Image 1 (cartoon, one colour):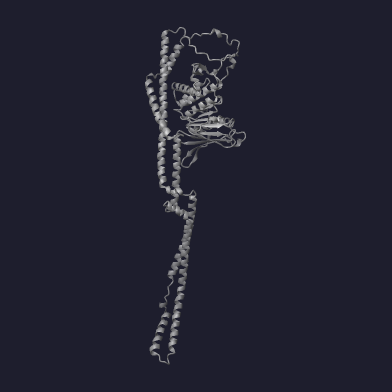
Image 2 (cartoon, helix red, strand yellow; image 1 turned 135 degrees about the vertical axis):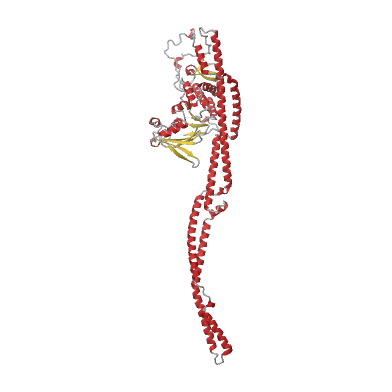
Length: 636
């Protein structure tokens, strides 16, 4: 699991909306003093473990804007889903939602405290808010230890660590017991080496599996991306469609409906007029009775005038011709009057046909853009064009989603780097498995060995030797032996922290303790530049630091900066040791304030390496720690 986004408003000093986005690995968030580093860390823990407890919420409510205090956290879970939890600290309300990739929105799952808390417990099984704060939140005051200045007499001579003195042989222990004890210690060391080798091999296998899953997810997303690219290639004609296509299609369909309605009305009128026109008789002047009578009379007049009438009867010829013409004209008038109504109806039909053509032309002119896109996409209708445009938009979003999944799978790395890391991890697994097999025969129950060693060592109490030169040291001084710091990796609960890490991760203490000490040794050597080379658990659970000269220095004798460095190296070692089983965000609240600049840079580099295995959020006031390629944010 890793954190994706934190949003705060009305929380302590954040009166306005503040938003932080995180990557899956190392993140650095720079901020000045009183700019919200501690507030951000406290808000993350509160949102990860929602509880309806006014005492926990009231301390985060802004005094300047108490009426609108709220926070939101988006997490990416191990099941590959995004979840967002929102808490309204003013109204004592909470809700939990899940991201829906198809709708690009968060869908509400729970809106009550009990079900939300139960769901978040499922994302973080076996760990409470107090456990998380103790183990996975490292603050600048995590290594407070009581000062021993009062116990040091005033002197001008610098203090030096006492050289280790060999332990005196216990009184009464015979040579056989000494040999037995030596054999048991040698066997215990070999057993611990075997357990450590097996743990390292197992951790390497887990890491190899994680990288393999990352490559598998990458291949799956690439396959989906290829399918989507194929679909987009088929819809490539939709690439040039305007963003307001839906609005254009809607307007086009509305105009098409209006056109259809008007055209339908016009066609109904044309059909009615056509039927009326067809019922009207068409008059033919040739068949008109008056025209026939006039033509017949004219023919008779010509025959009479040419062959029958005498000179004195010639006056009748023009009369007959005039009467014939009058009858022909009367026949023409009668036929024309009958055809006038038919002509009027036809003229009205022709007008409606022109009106229909005008409607069609106006629609084509108005929908020229849509018709152009329909032609370009080979769509037969606006509905088909809309469907193709929707499909193109859907596949484009799928392509973006697949590309985002690829980026998430890579975790900010290049694919070549992931494959190179996989090959290197394979080689490392083979090497560690070979080393584990070489010492596997020494793997025995270390608990029983330790009990036997303690029994032999405790059989005879060792004689206590006093240095006569310091017999009276402190006789006149009223002070008690320095006690360990309460809490933190530097205090007496180091055993408790490792036990907590063992319980959370499921790694046995016999395996976890050597792994922590090995990682802590590597860490302190790197951060101190080789000045200190080892950290281990001393008597009563206190850390003991060993310098390059072999001097063992108790925790309370170290300077504040060195104690802070030792605590940080131990805590980072614990987180690294359990990362193979539990990958949880590691939060650091300005932890390097007491360290000098070179050690701060080395500690930050250590966190970058740890960020390749789990998410690390470093909140710091030192902006100079940021490297060019670091995912970075800033609080103001």
